[in-house]
Length: 354
Image 1 (cartoon, rainbow, N blue to C red):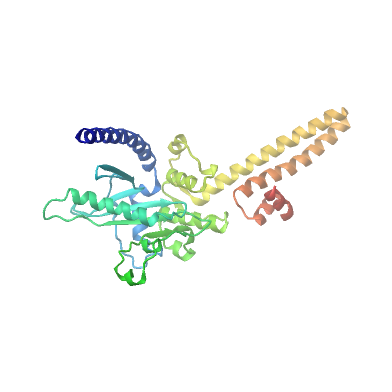
Image 2 (cartoon, rainbow, N blue to C red):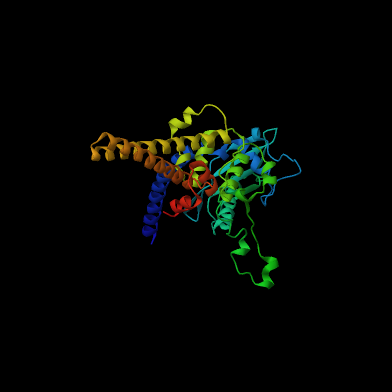
């Protein structure tokens, strides 16, 4: 039995070593992405706590809970060995807050979600519990652990958060035991469902993100405000993660080339203008091709004139249709698409269905 036990222990050690190596590779890749994440910026991170309360309402007291300069990034990896089993979990963003004297005050975590997750209450409870467990293990006599606060940022804009926000919503608790049940509640911030009045009180890139998500929810992708974007590459990267739209996809070269600040109006007008110009070029090129082909078939000067005229007409129609398809993909309202392209509402609707 002892030999079997030792062999088992050796196998566990080998497996744990392999696991550490694999997790190390994963963590290095994850860290590279996390460093560019919008909410890893201390000023944006702190605004989530200073400007919003736990239910997503905007703070009206003006209390500053976190000073950005007092926040320190800590490892998002939480690893513990429990009864010979190594348990690893990775938080999205995890920061330590220190006071002006350099003393640790609390740990703050943000979990980012684009979809509702029925496990979220249990997940956050596990993350927090492991954070406390790790502190207790290294606790010196007479010392105390620091509290942990976690919020979930929900980026969904098609549907509201529908998953349980507390442990009791996952359980069937007998009524006679309800008063003794150890419940656990999570704070979920639904940015797309903030009102205009609430968003108006926000600041910085948190406000930019909230405006964008609200407009996506309401399908009002026009009349962009002149809100300054502080971290342009990070905002674009996050918008691409949230929507999957190619328009926001930026490679490292693009990130490096964006050196100046931009407004939401600048950014989206730039994308819209580029899209429309591309549509015009496609339409004109197709028109020229149609005209020349038709003219060649007739083989006469008059035929060439007729062919070119027809090509221009068809080219304009194709150009309008091409632009309309792109604007439909951007979820622009049908009325605005009709005005921009000269097509009728029925034609726009037909393109949307097709």
